[in-house]
Length: 428
Image (cartoon, one colour):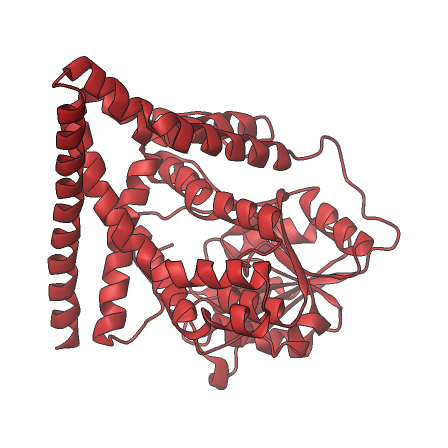
C-alpha cells in the first residue's frame, strides 16, 4: 500500500513541479518580450547573456580552483619519517570480482595493514575470496557479526574494535588506492596532529557511456560542493571510502551511526559539534567503478539521497543551536536545504526545457557549459592517468543532474509515505 502511495506522490508532484517551471519561464519570457518591445534578437541576447555574470564566471572560477587543488604530485611520494602504520578497512558484500584488486592496491603501501569485513549472506564467493586473501602478509578477514549484519556502519564499528593502529582508512571494495596518494594522506595527518578526519577525492572510472557521465556527475554533484564547503567554511560532508581518520577521535564521538543510510554524512555533523577538525583534500585520489547500468545508478542515487534527507530531518537544527556562529549557521542551512534542492531542480528543469524550446540551440549554452568544464577536468586528469581524456559524453553530465532531481523526488515521496529505507545491492 505504501509503495502505491509514494508512487502516486512521485508522479503527481513531479508533474506539477515541471509545470511550475514551464509556467515560470513563460511568465518571465513574456515580460521580457514586452519590456524589449517585441525585439526577438534583443530578447534572445538578454535571455542568454543573463547567465554569464550569475552562473558562468563564478562557476568557472570555482572549477579552476578545484582543478589546481586536484593536481597530483609528479614522482614518488615517500612516507614521512614520523608516519605511523595504518589499517585499511574494506567492508564487502557480494564483491568477489573487485575485492582482490582493491586489497592488492592497498598492499602496495609499505605501512598498510588490511582488515576485510565480509557479510555472512553474500550470494557469491566474496567470503571465500576474503579468506584466501587473509593468507597474505598484513591481511585479515573477519565476518561481520549478526548484530551488525547488512550495515556498513556496523561493520566499521566492529572493525574499530579489532584494529590496534590509531590511523584508520576505509576503502570500498570497488575502489583502487593509487600510488602516492596514501602517502600524501599519511604525510598530512603527521603534519597536522589536530586533523581528525581527512576525505579524499573519488574518481569514477570513465570507461563506457555511463562511466563518462558518472565521472562528470560525481564532479558536479559531490566533489565541487565538498571543495566549496571545505574552502569557505572549513566543513564538508565526510565520505566513508578513500578516507583517513584518527580512531580515537571517531570513537570519542560514538563511532558510526547504524540507524541511518548515510553514516558518513551523519558523522560529519557529530564531529563538527564535538569541535573536531576535518578536511577535504582533492589531491588524495582513489579510483572507483561506475554504475554498470541505469538501474544501479538509480538505486544507488536514491539510497544516498534518502539517507541525506534522513540526516537533514534529524540534525538540521543542531549545528546552529549547539554551535552558534557563522559555521554552525552555514552547516544548518546546508542540511536544511537538502530536501528542497530536488523539487527546486525539477522546477528549474521545466524552466530550462522551455527556454531551450523558445531560444533554439543557443539556449543549450547554460546546460552544456558545466559539461565543457567536466571535459576540461578530464583532460587535466588524463595527464595523471585518471581519465581517458575529454569526451562528448561529458557534455551530458548536467542533464544527468536534472535526472537526479527526479531520483530525489522519489526519495522524498518515499520518506513522506513512510516507506522503509532499504540498502541497494549493485550488480558486479
